[in-house]
Image: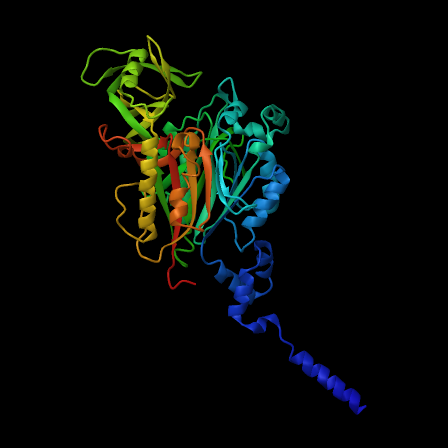
Length: 550
């Protein structure tokens, strides 16, 4: 009996002295939680108040995570990028899914939504090419491989097929003509931005292709005011559908938004939206979607300050004299303009063939077949509401399609008689030089310098700045054949911020960046410039802690 009592007493003592995981201390427990994959981390956060507090402290700083898979199976590719992105703790505020042309957007969106849910905005886009870190090799890759195939896939006699059509499973048969495994890819980018809110707002388009721009801008202002108390978000990332006339849209955004609002994106995108997305009129199709980054009015700089920095690498140079448009005719059904011109200071009206011959005579032969654009300076009225009117002057690029003995043919509309312009050519040397300038500015940003020159790059102050992610929108024309070597556009970021997550999309012919026209040409003056060609736009995210680093 005494022996049994002793055994029972020893067992009770053993149970009372048993060590639980909570007794190891917050520091060690935090280290363990920090190594959990995101899904297990989310479960651990729900164990008790103590664990939830520690998980919140771990996720007190912002994070961008991105991964690229070249797996020919879309299911496997989605699984690979998801597992890589969520291998560490993160609570996503937004997701961007970019795919190769052999995959269907509606399938990719459905697979990602099944994993992420519908509580955050999700943008799925079929890019002209991708930049990302390969899950198989952990190497960063630039893959501009879908240029011509995209045009054939998504155009029907040069008329844009609305992205909403991709929601119809039957439409998938149309896209099977050019499908090959060589352009199979999925790039997943997820962002966590504590102290900020992220929302997606769509731009509606009528059956007659009329854009509801005023409604779109109003929705952005109302959404931002509700989230931050300010009608201008900190940044707007815009995805505009192929064939969408973005000139009026970008001018209205420039008028309505604060000068401090960064505006970047892809003006020639093919996309669909998922998750939380503000669409007021579901009867109309979607022409564009804006991802809004807004300060959270309920959490003002509680854990630090997130900043967005924008840099632009140009790829075109002016050539020839200054001209003025004389006779202008819009071909609305084809989205083109026919015009004649005269040199500034002359009275002789020139046809398209004469203008092109003058330009060809001055070409230095940098490229065998350079692309030509008109850089047109437009001064237009911008209406903000029923009573408020603002004049805005901007430089808009129109691609030259050709010319004959009567007119010059260019892409797009909105040119008026008397508008001054210069002809621009795609220029490899300018692109490489501007890439070096971007790298120099990133170096200054890395060092916390407040003086970064006159670029559109916004520098952060202080030496405790933390760069935590970047996104690139690059023109498909800047492939290795144009730049002369591979993997160039990502170099300014990767060299200055090694190990920092970076994702990139190749755009068709319109990279969006709110910048200054003086980056291209000093002779025409300094004006706003929104849509670019042969350029790369860099969207860099930084974080300044409010106190000592964790």
